[in-house]
Image 1 (cartoon, rainbow, N blue to C red):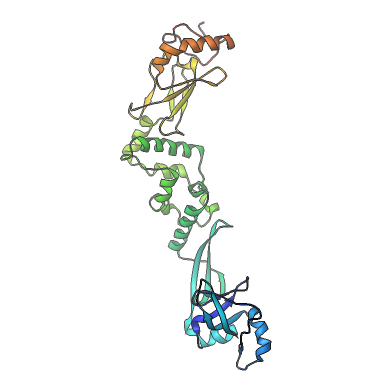
Image 2: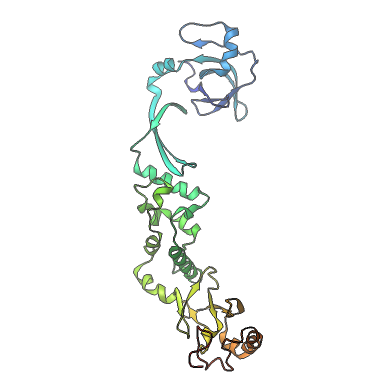
Length: 335
């Protein structure tokens, strides 16, 4: 058959996809195109002029290739069965593996193609595992949530924040585990665990906490709790959670009465980074933010005490906070 690269399949919008991969369309319904049907016998030109615009398959005999979409000057209708017989050596079976945005899943199908034109297709039950993996990772990377598609738990996000803090202060020692960093390195830490998975639903089987821990060499696993502890013990006996949301200034939010007797600000990362203390009122509202607890006791505590003692008279407001007994109750049990 002549012009094998110009066989076109009609799209839903009325334009045609040519076997060479280009798009093409008629200049107008009454453009005066000469046309015939390739069936072994010719038809009258006038009647074909009207229906050629709606033919499922055509051969674009004459094209204006200027612009992004070729304009069809002359075409003939062709029956699919006819060119499938005459061009059997150019028709191939292809397995297409793609990401379905709506289903949030990898979809594989077997296609019978003539160049860019899909003649027939059906679902493929056994696509290549490496292709599925590559498409799944691309689907994750391009998804609006990105790595957020994974089943993150509160504990996993907390570990990520602790590691992000350590990376911020020691970038040469600790890996970048921000969402962007994890996305950029999916092939290293995530890909080995994705074989056999093909959808967002399947991703929910993953244990993100374990995957993050797997990024750490043995020595860093041993150092982690000392360098970036989840909690800090305060004089009252409470263990207060550290908030690593801001890697530059991790926060310890604690009631003022629980810190009586603590002379210095707790420090982490081997003593290099002081915690930012959010000193709370009995109503759990910040009354002071400081990284210098010693200065607070010496210079600011008595102003805070004067203000809060009137509002919370039942609570403990000692004259010397450095020797007072810390408490998580209204007052220490021995007062």
